[in-house]
Image (cartoon, rainbow, N blue to C red; front, side):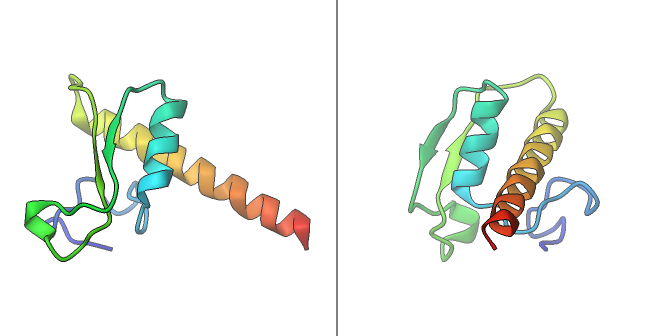
Length: 88
């Protein structure tokens, strides 16, 4: 998990370990947010990570938006792990 200096925006208890772009896009769709995604691109601060990024509409409170996105990503991961357990 990244440190605050490396770019983590939430406290460790609320943060999600290595969120993927597809998870973030799905979470934003569940929250009814229009998002512009750019897969395979890098942010200037981490030019070596070509994981892509997304641009969200401007919100009044960025912290609340990030917190709700992390909650949705956790729900997505929990649903996927439950589906995998059912397959076995």
